[in-house]
Image 1 (cartoon, rainbow, N blue to C red):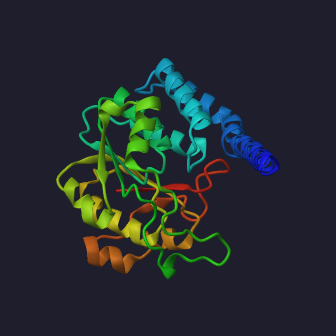
Image 2: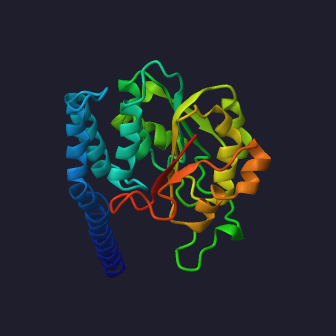
Image 3: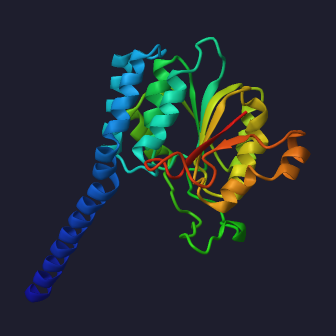
Length: 274
């Protein structure tokens, strides 16, 4: 019995060691290196405050620092520069322009925490929309031969955990949560003007639900930032002229970064303009 117990203890210790090594490697690969590589982008974000920006250099410095530090403390589903582009848009919104900021797809709340600082600084509100159960059933329309396919339940962040992360790293007072599947819940936002949005919802069906429910509320000229624009099923949603004509009696919106992203450090990010 003593010998068996010793073996179990040794096994647990080895598992703990392997787990610690895995966490350290993950931190270096997906958190430390991306932040280090994106430092020039963060500095450029700060210095743009010297050129007539609505956000002054010290405000931008604070945002850049907070954004980078959150990325180092919390697993995120994006590159640091990608959300920095959304922060730039939020702080440059005209104060007189009405509207909230809407995020669809929160994962663990890393992007939400970052956005909440910019929203708080500009006196707006952030609506965080998510099932908080991970991805829904992944239809065959989302399968891509040359890329890993998404799985149902992937990227799940439970609401209490996401809220706790935002409270710890962000500004929870300016955040409101909309919980549930998009086709069932986004209708609650009808009539609420949207000044800026960030949709990281991965699946074609989810993007369609977001567009159908929220596009009428997007302010004219506003930007909707989109993640996973390198995936054909996502980009195709914004290239289907017949669908846009039938749904909204208009042409598809201008899509910047479709299929190619916004640069080396923002390969999965693009935006459309209302």
